[in-house]
Length: 325
Image: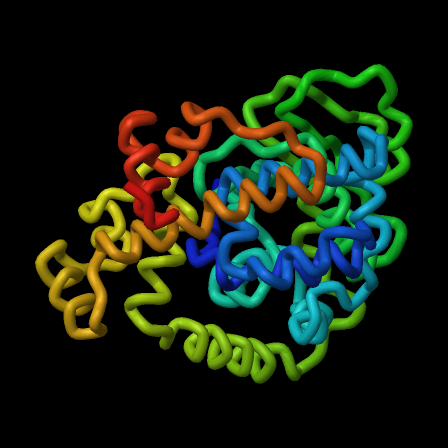
């Protein structure tokens, strides 16, 4: 038995959620808003709100499947040629961590090969529970990709979701091409026959390694961002969970002292970046509430989502941001 995993990089600035939603869903008010908030749009708490927007606009509990249906065959852009030239699905999943920064994907994937099948499990990299539409869309896109690569014959053995069983599973069966759909499971999961996992892709070609090398160079170019950008990206992702200096430094692979020194050299500080990230996130919630009709967040909710210890600390911050005593 072999166990593998891939972890997506934490920088939400790498995730072009705006382009995805514009192309896939066409929600009228989202494009300009997402354009203004390229960095903040995929922070954990904001992402939950984005999926809530879909439910509100469509009134359809299955809009996650509808989104997946609208994503074009070349939905992964320049990486589609790489995917098509891979020798098999097993290889494709093994190289996934090396190209993940270039993809529109907020989930991390792990897989376990058994005697007759492989079990894939998907969870959000930041530890936040996935919205139902987010799970639906991810599962449907995974199956759609497999079928585009292998042909319409391929289908998962079963698909598992973490949410409760809905009244109707018609949309699930249609989008996932399996009647074995399970609910109330620990995480989103897909089971695929080992034959399909290892079978040669019809479109495999000798350009695979060359295309993989090109993609890795693109990833390297993305990685060469400033320390300020990397820290702010991590702060946006971990704001409501654990945005301590020690945690961010550990994720960057440096000591706290080195991190402070690098930020000072860049003309900023961890405290200043935290303040800026919190202010941007708060502005995002305020704008989203007005634009999409969300209910106004209470001070307690805002304090929790922004990582403040209590509402008093948030009040002090709001006064600073407004320039008032």
